[in-house]
Amino acid sequence: MNILFYGTASYDRDSFTRELKDYPEIKIDFTETNLTPMTAALAKGYDAVCAFVNADCGAMTLEILAGLDVKLLLMRCAGFDAVNVDKAKELGIKVTRVPAYSPEAIAEHAMALALAANRRICKGYIRVRENDFSLDGLVGETLHGKTAGIIGTGRIGAALCRICKGFGMKVLGSDLYPNQGLVDAGVIDEYVDYDELYRRSDLISLHAFLNDESRHMINDESIAKMKDGVIFVNTGRGGLVDTQALIRGILSGKIGAAGIDVYDEEGPNVYQNRAGQVIDSITARLCSFPNVVMTSHQAFFTHEALGEIARVTLDNARAFASGTDFVERSVVC
Image 1: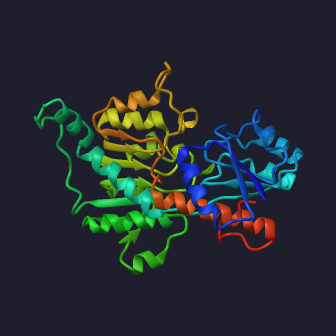
Image 2: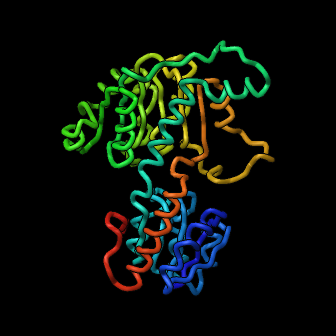
Image 3: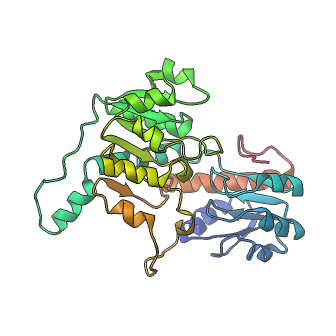
């Protein structure tokens, strides 16, 4: 099987090349070019293409790929928002993903963001670099004994619940499909609805799926229901949060600290170096607040996660070529 690997970064090439020795029947050509309608024609002669969360896998791209007889789209990420799934089905293109490459990596990053924002660690670091050892404006909240509200208690959310328990926190969960096993194991103290979670939580972290119902679930109305000074974290999906409402919540003091790895307007910025450009940047506004810490969609980014992404993606390519079973929960359509 020949695969064209779009949007290659150095770490992609390294992690996939490291695993390829165990897949002698698969050949990958890497290109830094991202997958869009303008670049889909590069896939001529390939059996499959591999893309990431920032690709454009809309109807036009898929039609071009189908016209080139590409039968498989390998998404090397958990989310598939970038894919027009209905069009892929119509065209007979198989789409797979990596359902869970490192839940702990993302959960750990979520807690790191919460701590950094709450304790003003970035601001304190910058002061010390400038030989300013004052503490004004750096006071935070102790997490021990407080309540964490985790929205979405799948593998990532459950991993964060365990971390919060380690901090001595009470943990509330909210999920369309509650996992009673987590309650029985003492990982979650109780499941509650969204409104009760907003009302009772000192720290709220998002790990829900993004769909039409959940888009902008964090908005002016939901923020108004939260505790004053709540610590808010999003390492899930940017579209879960209305960014302007988030900014209003920070300005009002309703949100006391915010750790953001994803945001609704991130599309043009994902994994791009735009340092030399003059842009109207929502990130500049958010980063101007001393109680906000932002990172660039990097919660997953560990050596362990990159290895798992490579193995699952290659396993799915092998399964497609041999007609065997795909990795569990990895088939989108």
